[in-house]
Length: 597
Image (cartoon, rainbow, N blue to C red):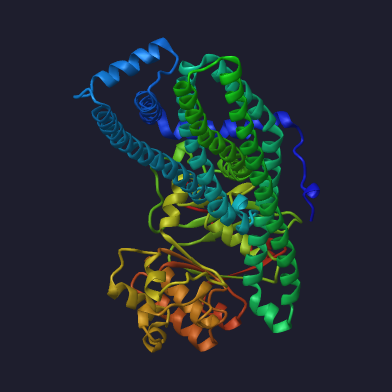
């Protein structure tokens, strides 16, 4: 694909906005105190660079035997040379070189301190953005998270955050380069105001001419960010369906899409490299032209002294480094800014969907064993799927079975019960309190939930169990495994508790995964256990044994089990049938709730 295929930015006037947002966020993170400290070290570094260049004048004066052609600079040069302990040329050179070496050592200390402070700022800023995204995700409403692509979140936390770190690093480096450039230009101005002003005009013209290059860098960066997101999303989906793809020889379609996206990403990177290198070559050519112009004006027009002209040209050569760094950094920053825009967009979406605590229930948590009531609860997804007008009472310590055909609203019922979705109308009450705010937080601490397709980490069985309750000891682990009928399984595995289960538990069978997930739920010692077809991959006898053990516990939790097997439902105290999002008529009557406030 050619470069012309890259989408254009709508208006060039919008280009500074992302940069200003980025700089504002960075400054807000750094704080005034740290910015002042870094600024001081930036100025000290530039000052020492200027003093080092200024020491060239007495060195050149001693070597060439002529002044700079500037009366007050020549006076300063004479004063410095006069400090030499001896009057001979050798002593003067020795003194000046020793002074120069001392200055280099001090400058090295200042630069080290400066760079460490800037590295702390950069790394701290990047990690603060990453942690902020994770914090927003952890407190975001589930209905918003459910609509987000996992690939997008992974891309933002990975490549977009990394690009943000690159932009932060280059912005700090640009500040260093700008300080050095300003100090060097000031010294050049002292040597020859006319030549220095000529160089300033040429630098300004070069900066103005760089604007379309920066716009192009931003376009390429946006295109590459979008392409990389597509690559990551496609890879994630392929890995999720790899078993199906291999079993039916469908992997060619993925390979074709991946190859196309990969080629597009490569073309963007090559285009940016070509643009950046081309710009650098142009600036190098212009630098040579500027040097020639300075020699022509200095010798042919101003009749500058040789020592002063040589010093000016040396300073001009030193200015080329910071100027080139500023150019390259500006292009790379604009190339990286679209990634930061993606990060900010995700922050905005998540920030607008945070769970809010209800002030009426602040500081209140439900008792460990309270009835749960659905009062005329309605929650409908797009397409009218969900539950409607749902009334149900779940008594403490009871074992309630939920059944119904596909699409009857069983999953929505589960999501409402654990507080992932707030009712669109009606209320879910725990001990008479609405399931929201602090009540919801307390409720979730006492609930364990096991889904039909449980998620296991690519880690050991021990780590998978301790994730639910980090303070659990070995006895707690084996008690939970025994209740779930998984203790014999773990003892058979190589490594036992330290056996790795694979990505999402793929090294275990479906029934084994469900047993480990159930053990993880039980190790929390919940007072309410929700099983969403959590034992359907286990044989009937094995499932009966598990449920019997749970019922025989000294203080069994309240249990709600979604199931289709008649043998499973036969163990329940009460069975509720859902159809079309509603309770069947025979089961809608419920006793009055005595615990409501």
